[in-house]
Image (cartoon, rainbow, N blue to C red; front, side):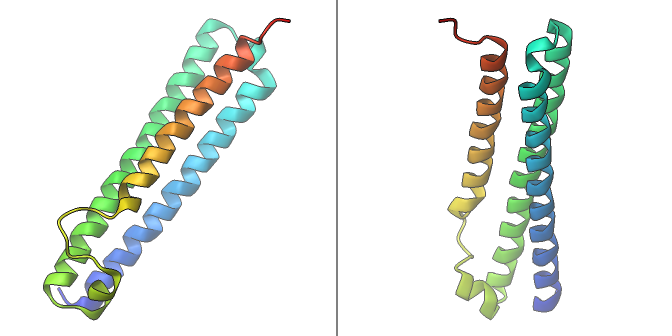
Length: 128
């Protein structure tokens, strides 16, 4: 593949990452709205269903983020091996992934756990 083709694939994967982030924010917003507006009124089955669907969709976006970062890393490694100027300027070409490749999924997991705790706190308010 030429440098131009590889850069096109990198750009496509970055767009997929951005779309996945938007999808994750949409899922999170919907879950938090459900928790805040009607969380207290849901029965056990409904809460379980909402939590399971949220976890599956959040897990899917996290998995998509990890795999897209891996693809970008592999493409950038190939560009680096071809001595492409872009890859050399960005600093790819190492075997380890950049910190952002692991930071995004880690933050997503923390936010997901925080959302679950928010649902729990809405359903179990502190008594005075």
